[in-house]
Image (cartoon, rainbow, N blue to C red; front, side):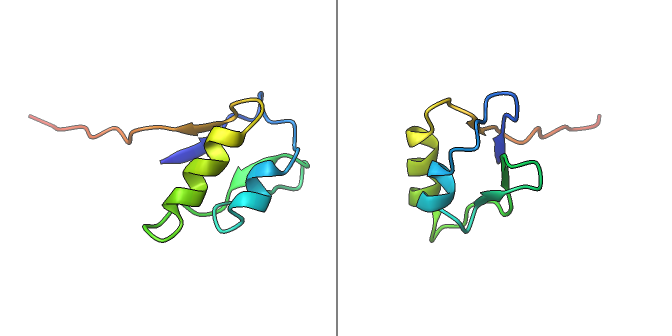
Length: 68
C-alpha cells in the first residue's frame, strides 16, 4: 500500500507527472494517493517514489491480523 507523508510533501508534483494514475494534487496543494498501483502502473509508481525529493511517498505493508 502506498501513502503520502503529508509532513514531508512539498507539492512539487514530480510524482504526479510520473504517475498520475496513482498520485494527484489534493485541495491543500499537496499530493495524495488517488488509487493504489496496479500491475500495469507499478513501475511508474515506484519510479515516482524513488524520485521524490523529500521521500514523502511511503510503501507500507498492510497489517494482517489473525484472531485466535
